[in-house]
Image (cartoon, rainbow, N blue to C red):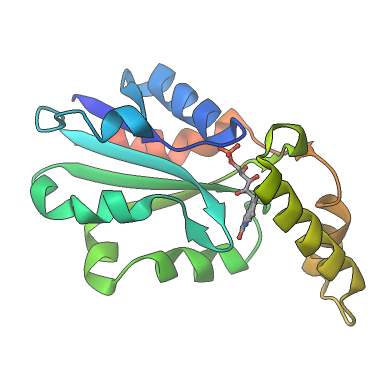
Amino acid sequence: MKTAIIYVSQTGFTKQYAEWLSEETGGECIPFAEAEKTDLSGYDAIVFGSWCHAGMIRKLGWFKGNLSQWKDKKKVVFAVGASPAENPEIAEALPKNFTEEEWEQVSVFYCPGGLRYEKMKLSSKVMMKMFAKMMEGKKDKTEDEKIMAEMIGKSYDISDRKYIEPMVEYLKAE
Ligand SMILES: Cc1cc2nc3c(=O)[nH]c(=O)nc-3n(C[C@H](O)[C@H](O)[C@H](O)COP(=O)(O)O)c2cc1C
């Protein structure tokens, strides 16, 4: 199966997951800027990996805009965020990026990344710092919120190759 692995990554976590996936599946990694100019008709599977920004998957509009052209292809989205994989909010947040019809056509996965303040654009850094301050000051935090509030003040890496396993299995299945 010929697989295109298109990725959008600001600080490297999504790129790393795309590369791990490429090693496991033999798929071709294509940075988003290049994918927009690439003829993808010859691929059997299209994987789109991108990072979460305030609950939304970056550049997903481009992927969704192409779904009608990819009717016969396997379609996968993986989202990378700062939340641990166990965070129950992920299962609620991901479907909000899709209409019901789109959701039925795509297999969606989540891979935890982390935060790399040193690689963020200034605007991202400012937004994250504001969010971190807000979380810190929030009263009556849930246990999950307490953990997040402590984590997001500085850079951390919770990515792991193991998180691609369900995706690899899905891509390799007939
Ligand atoms: C402005 C901003 C908003 C973010 N919003 C979310 C979010 O809603 N959920 C989440 O899990 N992570 C969020 N993140 C964290 C990124 O998704 C995370 O750092 C991800 O690993 C970045 O991937 P990349 O290294 O490929 O750019 C946000 C980061 C920034 C800078």
